[in-house]
Length: 203
Image 1 (spheres, rainbow, N blue to C red):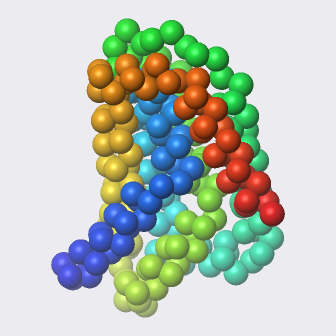
Image 2: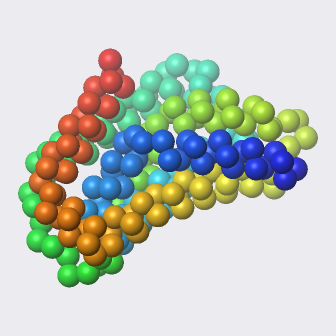
């Protein structure tokens, strides 16, 4: 892949990564609920999910998702249910005691964060549509496996780096303290947003 082509790919996936949506809401909430470790784990899990979609698209497998309505709908409705579950969990959450440090997060919470981040990406078939449209400009019959891996690492890496940055900024002492003071309202707002997105997907 030529440098100019890679830079064009980098620019597009960067814009896609920073666009607000359910992923940002989940990373923000998990950072608030579990601190830096929880937020970073969520970000990395999401990056893996995005990278996986990028890889299967580069390998041509995303056609199964975009062409066959049943496969697309199963993933789409699964994603809606997962968003609804996260939304309900946020609405029912009770204010947790402040964490002793911004980086404190039990291993279980980090694993849960990574799982939620991955599933938010994996259960979003629109990612397949996005990457099919994007990679059609870069993938040819001569595209090598190494080039496919480069595209995967670019998409997943940019996504993970963006959300890790979000988690690091939000987990800074003064910022986290302010967010903790508004935790109940942030949870409620996040829950409403996620439920609204779930309903939008279904309808």
